[in-house]
Image (tube, rainbow, N blue to C red):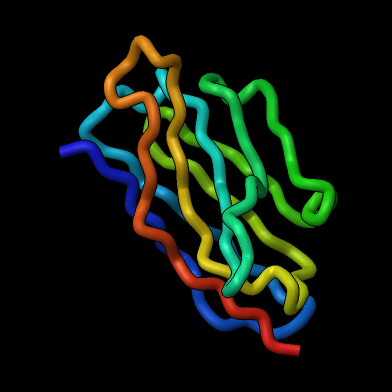
Length: 120
């Protein structure tokens, strides 16, 4: 069964840290670029961070640069999002996403999401 399972969300105070994990199964993990998205209430889902298949390149939304770090462990089929200096505006449901060329099936996979709440 193809799936992504996020964990590590929760309630944290302003300035605190959390690490999200996303465990993949049912597909060849290292064939997929991995991304973290988030969606706050009333807002569109936005890309937070991405990492290439081998982990050699990463990209970040301007709003999280310098505070968040994405990494992956292909031996463990897991991608991480280390979040530091959290702000109330980081409050959202965070989703793990796997993306491969259209020749792969499935080419896009989503996790169920994990809630992150930052109190002021």
